[in-house]
Image (cartoon, rainbow, N blue to C red; front, side, top):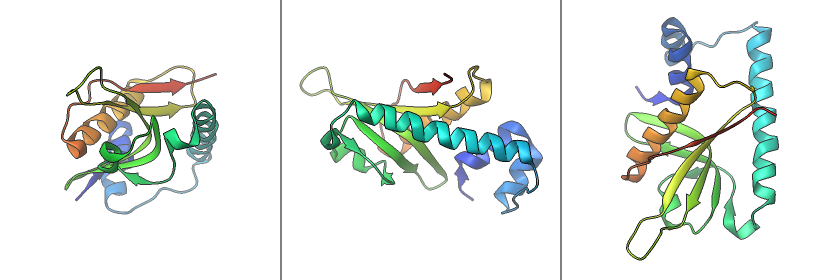
Length: 152
């Protein structure tokens, strides 16, 4: 069984929900959960556009790309990155690339997560840590930091 970011998020909220989601069960009829999901997606789209506006199209990669392609790409921002290993998978909202400080040093990859709420929760931080952990495992290098863009 592959542990994905939605399964991990469900575990943070409720272990029973995680079990059901891992076995293909989807909840229905929860208007608040649907509203939160819609708000998160619209906030994510707005913030992605805001970030991409400050960067030339050559420096920004859009669409679902594999994390291993980040090493070869010469971009500052990658959007909708899929990082996966044999047992883990995460769909990262964005990954910023910071060039190395000198010759022989590797570039830094910084996972970015978008949250529409003004106040962050522990679960938001743990989801970013999960993104960083999976990206680290997929790239084979240490990821020491991440960013959460949130609120107004």
